[in-house]
Length: 143
Image 1 (spheres, rainbow, N blue to C red):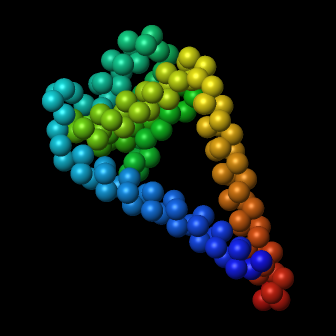
Image 2 (image 1 turned 45 degrees about the vertical axis):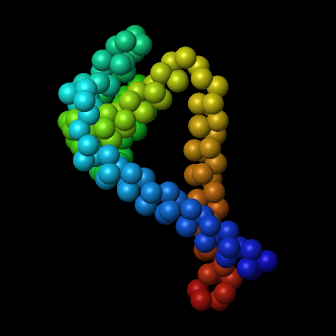
Image 3 (image 1 turned 135 degrees about the vertical axis):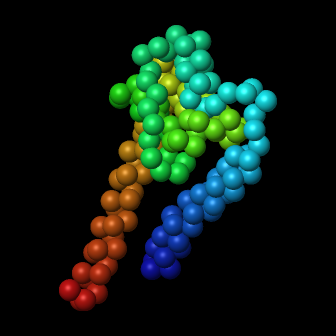
């Protein structure tokens, strides 16, 4: 049973790490290639939102690296400076990806409910991992 728990914990830590490394690698590659559209991420996001009549969706700047996101509660797309002002293929792709989430919510796309459920379950599983580790430490008699 202990081996199973160790394997699960390793997988939970390893899989997101591998995905993150791959994501950064692809981003670095395409952030060096300028788009032929001659526009930046924030401009193409606004034009696309307006085309889909989503004028109520705001676009705000955020800090971080690859922390761009769409918040349906506030109807806001958060773009990092790199995404907002770069004309790279990566920046335009990221900006339009976030616009895609706004469009999906506005059209009632059924899989968005699944996305919300997955987010809730991932939060619950993180709490479960922390409780398991704390329980193991306490049970070991170290405290």
